[in-house]
Amino acid sequence: MRRILAPCAMFAVTVGFYACATYSQDLNRGHRHFGANEYEQALAIWRVMENDIDSLSPQDRARYAYLRGMTDYRLSFRSDARHWLALARAYDQATPGGLEEPWKERMKEALKDLDNDVPGAGESSPPSEPPPAASAAAPVIPGAIR
Image (cartoon, one colour):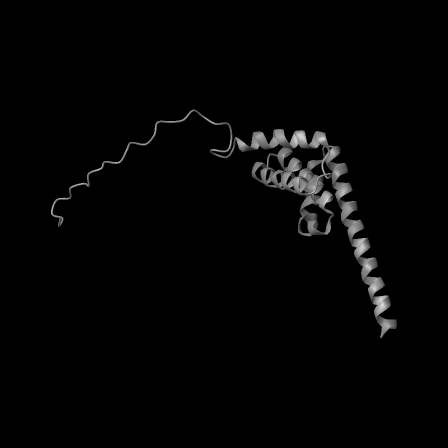
């Protein structure tokens, strides 16, 4: 029985190792496209990887979310950009080290810009007039039983 289990276990570990290496390679390939301003190619890679981001390390998840969000931002997919950049910020807060400082600054500026698209989330406007106070007396309805 051990003769069968040992090779099976080794096979599973080997496959797992190469699968993780493939995701990291895809992440690096997409990053190269992003760096070369080839946003459509980068987005194609990000979309293929999306279902498997849980296979990445926590730092690489932050990196993926940042690159995906900034790719969407550069392609004017603003709601998708907001989603992915917010995830990148959350991943980086949970497990620091995935994002470089210049990336954090760019992400902060992009999110500030994107927040202006959401009513009530952007820059605050001066307070409007408070709603009129409700009358203390109950309205009189003709024909109603008192």
